[in-house]
Length: 83
Length: 241
Image (cartoon, rainbow over all chains, first blue to last red; front, side, top):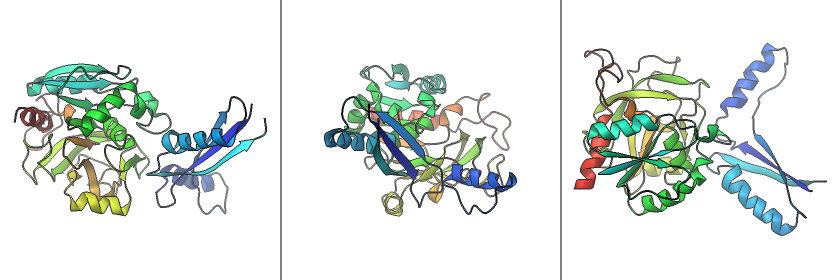
């Protein structure tokens, strides 16, 4: 079964409190030299049958309808991984 | 007047919302997220909580619950709808209201008594208040930071659609968040749609409806606050009018 991976990130202009929290914790653990962190989401969708262009179009719609909220997030990648 | 209150899996404040409707003089009606039926109610409250565990995003999955399909159509037709906290998040996710909520800027859950200024007393849910009046109701959330793009914010301001704004005088809070509890743009606590029938706010008026069980009212005593009742009496009056 082909797997489609969708990456969702907070929009650049939106403050990312989770990323900020991670960025603040890193130097406390001795991980220096990291200027900033932004945290997003990765979805793995297993597709029944072939990942045709038609299927991908449906998934793109799902990604912008449910998997992300366009007000605060961008779908930055939607890619097919080998089965 | 029958006021429906929707229960989703993970809703917390449906009982308090039903009680607020009763104390205001309405007939409370429980609605179920999985039912494709509004039971002919005259208005609907989407209460607070963590529907569907806030999975994905707060309010995201609830926005597609069977009852919401009916509710979105009815709201577009003028049915008064009030979204409180998680209910506000759901209204934003269904695009009945613009913008979205993200995590509080200080990254902590915050619970306190919060003063709010009534900026618009012409909505279905705020006619019992005076414009500029400051009310005090509990606030409790983690994802309460209201965000929208500059164009949307300008439109909300120009059209007078900011209904509640955070003001100073809360019980406590992190440094820098004395008035605005979460970093919300323009200190926005609640907004309305163009028609004024759909209102959403993050703080909890349904927890401030009965003396003895409300927030502390400075100068009057502990738990005496009933400032939230006005939302529920407002909608009953607007339905009769």
